Image (cartoon, rainbow, N blue to C red):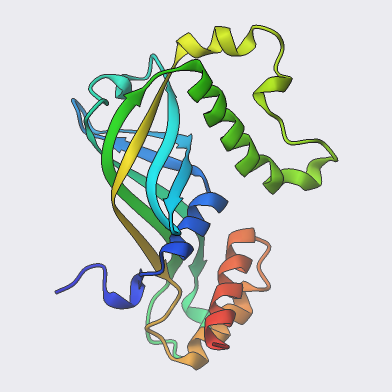
Length: 212
C-alpha cells in the first residue's frame, strides 16, 4: 500500500516551491538527542525550479544547535488548511475531515559561518516575506543596510546559521479529490462563505481543480 495515497501527492516541484515561499515559517524537526521542533523562516533555493537547498538560522542557545552539523533533519511547511463538515457534502454518509496542503523536506544540515552570509540570509528573508504584508503600509523592503550601526555585528554572535541540502521534497495536497465533483463543488461553495482565510483559499483551489 502506498502512503500517502497517490491522489494526495503533488509531483509538481514548482507547486512545492510556491507553497514554501508563500508560507516560509516552517517546523524544523531534529532527533540528535531528543525529538525537538522549532518554527523558523526558511529561504528555499532552487535549480531549474526544483528545491535543492534551504537556508535559515537559529538562536545559538537553542538545544537543536547541538549536533545539528551533519544531522538528518525534517522541515515541514504548512500551507492553508480547513475543516470540512459532513453537512457540506451532498452525500452525508461520511464524517468530517480537514483539507490541507503541506511540503515535507528531508535533508542533511550543515552549519555555515560568515557575517556577510548572514546579511544575505536576512536580506533574502526580508525580500521574500515583506512583500506579503505590503498592505500594512507603503514602505521599502527592509534590508540589513537599514539597521542601526553595529546591530548586525551584535546580533551575529547570538545566532547559528545553517543550510540543508535537500534530499527529498514531498508535497501533499488534500483537496477532497476522492469525492465526487458534486460533493467537491458543494464543499468549495461552503468554504468560500467562511470567514477564515485558509478556508477560502482551499475553496479556491478546489474550484480551480474542478474547472481544469
